[in-house]
Length: 94
View 1: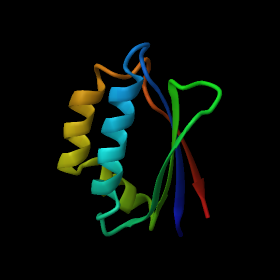
View 2 (view 1 turned 180 degrees about the vertical axis):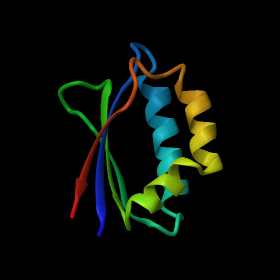
View 3 (view 1 turned 135 degrees about the vertical axis):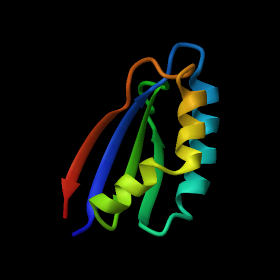
């Protein structure tokens, strides 16, 4: 059963451009993962500090493998300086 994930991401004031650049770099890396079916970044037109990552994974195991990837750890290390708060995840089974 496929798994959809919506990740709400909020930048700290002044870190919007850095966060967006980091997220766009991450998109290219994540799309190469075997379990990734969709990985799209959206930027709010009303709140430039808000981003949504729309993800589709083969299953929960694929998502868990994604979370252990070296590029996710590298992004997390950089993003701690860019994020206003923890990423909010919503998961939906298909």
